[in-house]
Length: 226
Ligand code: CTP
Ligand code: CA
Image (cartoon, rainbow, N blue to C red):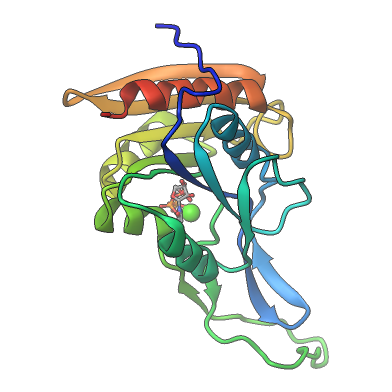
């Protein structure tokens, strides 16, 4: 099924996209973060906006220009990202969770720069961050699309993640490959989605992240009940 998006395809729709990493402060000069360029999420925001949607991008620190027409909020921590998503999401939004959210954060943040003591190692205690996608799926009626970056058992892990988070669609990314994914301009996704109680799958790419974004948006548009 080939659907072509035009500038009005998503008119009247509100999309919220998370992108990039989150960074979790250890002290004023150090942080914990995930690997993510933000390119995939920015491409989705850009193409959804070009297809007529009102798009809110909630982005961790990345060095990308905000796509024209997209409303962007920059955040640092997972907690700040969750708050901004809660503020901007509507019950009829499409929510695309593309961010590489840090699963853990330091339990306490030192207010002054930590100094080395002799040649001792350092242990930092971590606590779990909130799961933004799980919150949206559980507490709102937004149509949720997740991403699953995996290095092994890609399909199985992605499908079980879709069940666990209670979402309709998940895009699996094999991040063990070096020709696609992280920091590249290209990507290949294996998308799993539920339609009439059946789990279906569709491969998108390999192609530029912009092309992949376009095809993913078409798929969301086709699967989402309107
Ligand atoms: N996600 C999120 N908030 C988190 C963690 C993940 O919104 N605190 C979202 C990601 O943006 C992605 C999806 O959940 O869309 C899956 O993220 P992933 O890290 O693959 O899954 P986790 O549930 O964190 O499981 P794990 O890292 O242990 O594989
Ligand atoms: Ca994770």
